[in-house]
Amino acid sequence: MYLCQKGEFLWNLVWAEEKKYHRSRSKAETVYELASDGIPTMSSSTPSTKMLVQEAVSVLRAVDSSLSHILSRMKDLAKSLTEYTTVRAMSGVGEVLAPKLIAEIGDVRRLHSAKALIAWAGIDILL
Image (tube, rainbow, N blue to C red; front, top):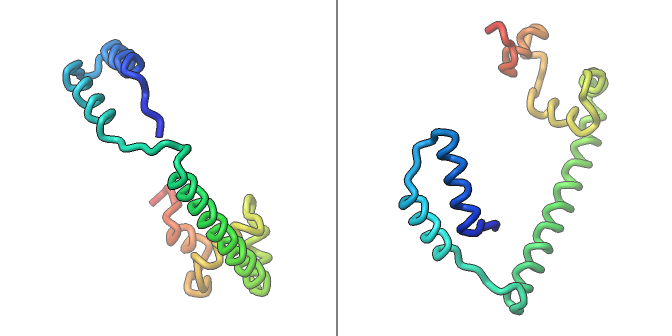
C-alpha cells in the first residue's frame, strides 16, 4: 500500500486550496497521523511474510488454473450450440465473450425480436 510522505500530503492540501475545495489543515494533519499510525506493516524479510506471500501466490495460481479450465469448458460447450455462430458474427464478440453472452441471455426464443433483446439488456437509449 502506498502511503505518501507528510510533505506530499500537505502539497495536496495546497492543491485543494487552489481548486477552492473545502479544507481544514488541522483535520488533514489529524487524518494523516491516524493513518500513519494505524496501518500495521511487517518487514518483507521475515520468514512469516515470505510464507504468506508464497501462499498467496499459490492460491492465485490455483484460482487462475481453475478459471482457465472453466473458460475452456464454456467455449467448448458454447461451440456446440446453434446460436454460437450468430453471436460470434456480432461485431466485437470473440470466442471469450460469445459463451458469456449466451450464458447470460439464456434461451433467446423467449424474446420475440432483436429489440426485445436490446430492451432486456437495458441498452436501448430511447427507453
